[in-house]
Image (cartoon, rainbow, N blue to C red; front, side, top):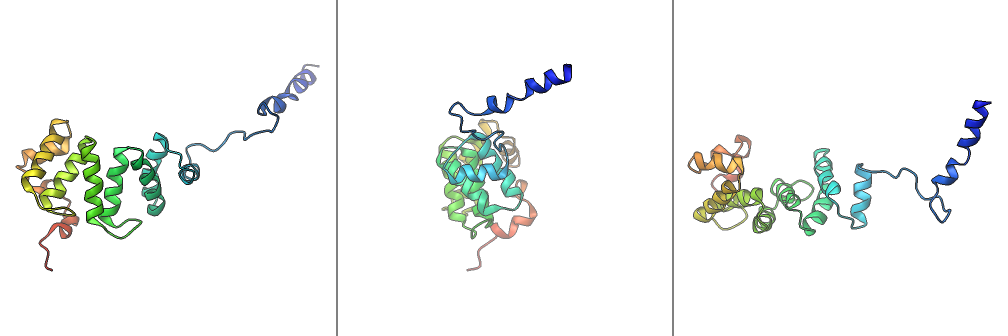
Length: 180
């Protein structure tokens, strides 16, 4: 008897799960998945979770798709997305290498007050990569990033602005003397 009663109580549940107009709607829509983020991006939907998922997309090697997510998020003012766009442009991921575009993304993040943007644009200026060489201006930006509490900027200050302190050996070829 108890089994029959429980079975009867369960019958109307699917009807209750439909939306108010009776159309059914989508039960359990996909959330926090790469395909959902890419679908949202195609529709121009920006959200913090979607912007954060751009990291997972680029780490999975889907750089062109990550660029789409980060460009949308950067346009909405997310400075972390600007920093990621700089990284993608600086390393030619998902598009040809473009140091000037990378420096421009860093500049935008710096102007928005982002400590990482300040630091990266400071490095760009100190190296003259993608922007005019301006060692004093670069140091001033690094100092602002350090004042904002960025540990890497403080470490560079302590190293008397020796760029080798923050540059992986594998990247030295990018910052060496230009032969032509």
